[in-house]
Length: 372
Image 1 (cartoon, rainbow, N blue to C red):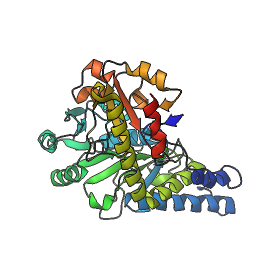
Image 2 (image 1 turned 120 degrees about the horizontal axis):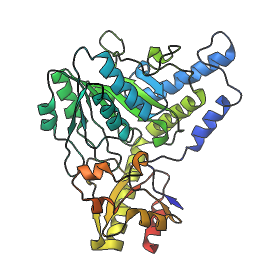
Image 3 (image 1 turned 60 degrees about the vertical axis):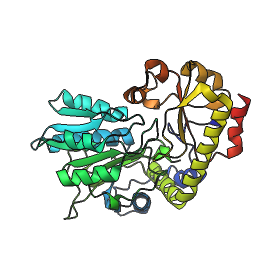
């Protein structure tokens, strides 16, 4: 079966698995313990992994906070900023096409007295920078805007958004889950971007591990937020709990591999996307409509309508040959809010499938579409 649901999760790289195994068996120490070798070995492994992630993101290693994944990171940052800076304002700005872990967090905060503005997007899921500028108020404390959309692949203009947030002196968070490992990211070029969320299993790392980037200020101090988890004070007091060393090691190894092969993978994914697009056009012609843009997007992601065909029925028929999805795995039980937000009708939403590729795929494997 050809796996084309890599935006949902990816295959663990063999080198990632090999790097993790010793920390599941022989090297089982707690990195927060002291003096003995098991603890020191674990601590050094965490330091190395943190360094690899910092290199991939273009930040310092002390700005990386380990979490269980992007859902936790999004919750931790948005709730943490809202609580810590509540005396400075109660207004948050986000978009209508965010991941559910952002949207549901914002809806929760509305029940606690926060005001949330949900920005409209264009037909490809991008915000208009003027809309963001007009939405910022004196009591705005946080802007949270997805970097690369998980269903359409569209990239927001994070440089312009970052510069605006610097100008307006507003914190900026971005869910970069689908971007890291697939798009070049250098956070030193985005001074207004204070917070970032990302996850290991989206770029061939293990599940259950993710991270947050929290920018340091001019005094080399992390931007303050209220912790989501209180406890032993791990991760600079931001995220308490015993570190999952085996997962962190795998996360770091995946980051190292992603950085080493980034240019090659981007080129390969772009070629796969172009080839599959041509195959679909040739095979289905006027019976399909592409929802995604062809520029300024995550490579290797295609979102396409099969006119008049129910996507759930189609996916079941394809399942013996191809694994794909209707959209985000975190909201698979209901029609896509992303596609609704870009103006698609319910019938169009229910006829849409997302194909997302990985660098593991060879072009010849996509020829399976010729047999459909």
